[in-house]
Image 1 (cartoon, rainbow, N blue to C red):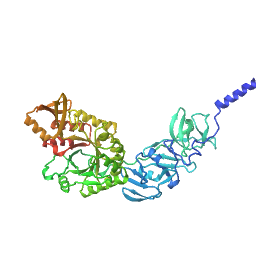
Image 2 (tube, rainbow, N blue to C red):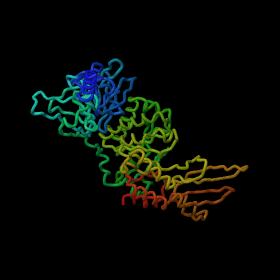
Image 3 (spheres, one colour):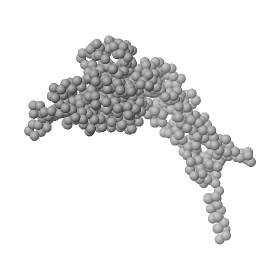
Image 4 (cartoon, rainbow, N blue to C red):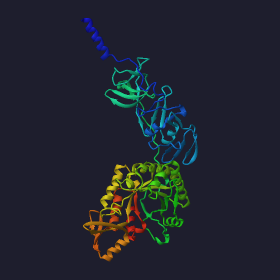
Length: 555
């Protein structure tokens, strides 16, 4: 009995008191040649090469570094974009392109067992990543710009020359040992659990160490890349934008017929449009208009549209080649006509093409920056409309442009089943705040689009059924109609607009007016939210009083 008690006691002492001396290897050891880690987490796949020739698998880079990196299989092209650089790489080719100019590579991207590998040094140059490679274990540790690396050091024991501290697989002295760490070993602190630290060695090993066996190390933060603000946008940092679109149809307006536009500092004529699936651009630009605008102290942001043709848009956005064709033609026209910016207006787009539109803007931005151009894109309020709203990734677009211009109108559109305001004030406010809050867009990057038109809604009743039709009219025509019909507008607090109605030919006509009252409230809304400015559609719909009110955006 005594021997049995002694045996049980010895077993208990060994199991519960004595620390485990068993050694083990990380799960990835022997399975992954060059494991990769971000923030202590093991990533899928393996790096290849070493030193300057280290290459990382594209799927990992897309997951851990930049989800917007593109691979186009048909042309075997890798496309990387930053605010200042557009990089094109080809598989197994040591010549690429940066901002459409040839670039020599030290190492070419290569495909191995169906996986494409990209030179790691490019991530350092383009994204400011830090890459630590351990020669002994093969581990590759990636650290992102702005990432704070907290360090602990293994403590010393002056009484023991061969003193080591165990790194264990779990927060228990009974778990196996991954490594015996010498004093001074640098540990990346990942987490804390009771009296243990969860740490990573620079050879990739991750595990637990007793807090009492470490001392504070020197923390460091990976340097962040400096924020990129285009020189063209810098000019607008201290002032508000007061833009008006110039709708150019078959006959371009003569500058001499326009007159003064007090307060307007940007005009955006609708001169450029998509012609075919190859990305070619049609131009209706007028150099005389540009000279007139510049003489008035205005910038000219040429508008480029997709012709509102969804199938044409699909084809033109589908490949780097067609997107670049569009971009280079627009840059050519910008230089030819001395434009100050490009305003992109893509509407009636298949939802599946939204990511390609965002990519198009990412590819345009660095080249436009080289040309000193302001880049803006028009977006609709958020809704469930597949072709007019759902395709727009406003968050991604905001990251790729200088300005988003919110077309906050057509709340009730031309064929709307019910009569209503083109843009009631509560609806406008909600449209703005949703984008600011849900898509993390900075107010100083958002321009409020304002209508200078209204709709006359005509309701008739036939066989007990209400029939609805509408027509758009400008501010002057609306005021003339009010005078002719001797109508008295009344303020609708529900819409923030003046409202009139009248009967004619057995029909009820209703108008929610765009006038000094509605424009004043929109300007005040833009000011209260700290927006970058306002934009109006379209110049020809305006009465003179409109410019007097709109110029208050700068006050």
